[in-house]
Image (tube, rainbow, N blue to C red):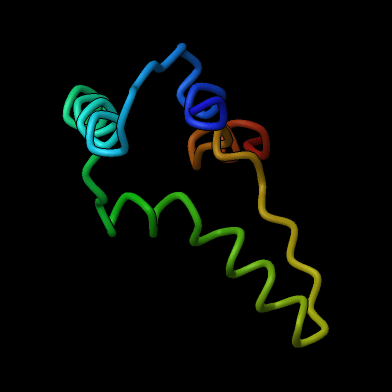
Length: 79
């Protein structure tokens, strides 16, 4: 019980295993996991994965900060 209390961050008191399972299930229902969006995951990891795979091929790729936009680059290099 102590280990479950440490993991959940709250004190859990249960007399039987079935009571413990019921308490843990209540926590699971109260805090459902966020739905997994594969497109969002791809967008978050694509640059890092590209950099890593390029490094395996001996190419060091430094991609700019995402706050850099095409407009800011054009404004910087306009005469």
